[in-house]
Length: 95
Image (cartoon, rainbow, N blue to C red; front, side):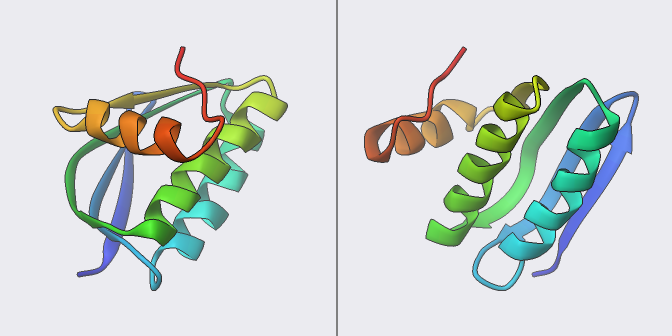
């Protein structure tokens, strides 16, 4: 499934798969967003698949946001599972 990213009132809804095929697209998109917005909120409710490349993309996004002094938030019912996966395998910090 393709990846779509839509912004509405400062919240970026990500839908579809974040995997080896789409992770680069996501990282490229949000690198531009970080330069424009002082805060990034990502709604993950409509993510249907996330693999190792997807987790790496989210970790990279978080790292880039922190280094640019951009607040980073994830919204969704499965967000705790993503945070757990990232914190078990890295120094990804939750705020």
